[in-house]
Amino acid sequence: MHKDIKKILVSEEQIIERCKELGKEIDKDYADEAPILVGLLKGSVPFMAQLMKNITIDIEIDFMDVSSYAGTETTGDVKIVKDLDRSIKEKRILIVEDIVDTGITVAAVKDLLFQKGAKEVKIVSLLNKPERREKAVEAEYVGFTVPNEFVVGYGLDFNQKYRNLPFVGVLKEEMYQ
Image 1 (cartoon, helix red, strand yellow):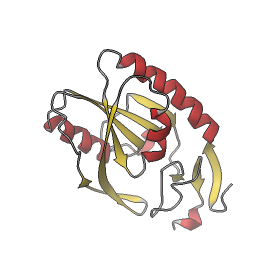
Image 2 (cartoon, rainbow, N blue to C red):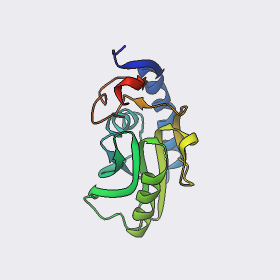
Image 3 (cartoon, rainbow, N blue to C red):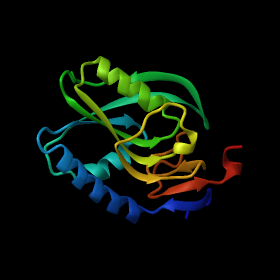
């Protein structure tokens, strides 16, 4: 375990197993028309890579870079740093997110994708933290529900660090206070 981590919440093995289950659900739900997976940079990358290995239908992928955090707190102001590379008019979209926390970011992205003409927008998230929800948004597919603790690893960061940890862990308080 990394020296800055208080405890591991979700192991790499658990994530791999859950991605297999989510892949089967997505295959079944999108059998008639494959979605475009839209990964939200940078946190979704490890989860999206693992999830895609377990989806057998023909999917397309794209990325958006959106930000609403400064340190440990959301600013409430969602910035689009990188937009999609293609049109999504009349397409089914599956947003791939590392965590649905306050819901502010993913709700804004979902609204934007509908404004761009998507016919359907759903969310798959590695983690769900409902205790912090400020916007009424829920992911249709969830890997794990976690308590209201500061989590890092498997794409989640604190000031761009810890994304490469192969598990989801709780960061020691002294690292961010």
